[in-house]
Amino acid sequence: MTFSICVHETYEGDDGDEHDRFGVAVTTRLPGVGTLCPFASENGAVATQSLVNVDLGRKGIAYIDDGLAVEDALEALLNADDGASNRQLHGVDREGTYTFSGEDCKDWFGHTSGEGYTVAGNLLTGESVIEATADAYENARDGEEPLAERLIDALAAGHTEGGDKREELRVQSTAVVVETTEAAELEPFYNDLRVDASLEPIADLRETYELAVEGYEKTLEKYEDAYEADDIDAGEEGDVDAGEQDDVDAARE
Image (tube, rainbow, N blue to C red; front, side, top):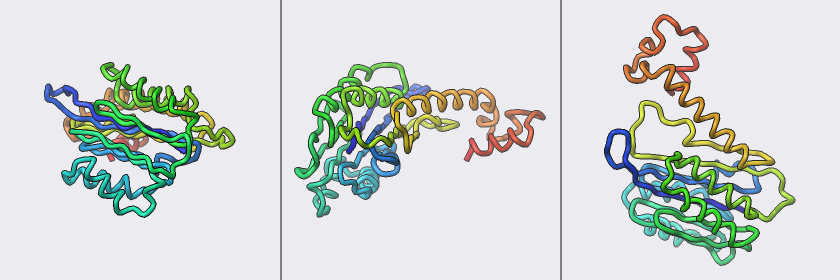
């Protein structure tokens, strides 16, 4: 019912140090996929799908955060899962990748992986969906665009190729989550986005992403001094009305 991509990248941050980032993007022909499938931390990324067992994602990330390799973490969870034959589970950490598709997943199902990424899907129009998703990510891997944007583009490529084959299910959803080891005064709003019910989920996610980027940039521009000083008065000295104060307080939470 789903296809998704998990990614790990290393990059040089604004501080000149090397950092890691992890991302997951997913879409399906059901509402609310962002509440069920994608999981990420500054140590790894995991997607759980097909007949979803949310604990595989939650515990998988927790195990990776505790220091287990992604392969050991996810295999241990599947070995303890009586419904493993119905699951798809895949993910990445700093050192490697892991992919699994149970034999009872529904056609077309399958997975692929490359350097620092995994892609998996089930109930798809065909293998070309995950191939297109993987190719789109690989072709943009060295681009300057934020990872969240490139993950949305990868989903769009798979969706264009056919995506989830159940065309009778009109209400769809999608999500993207990115985590990084690089500290920021204000975490980017565009790194954790969901479209829970839509007839055009990828297009709506892209629009949501673009608006989130705009909102992030304008927030930094308006309140940068306040974040640097950790003092609301530093951002808008003598010029913050009650409504603006509420906006800033909400952004800081």
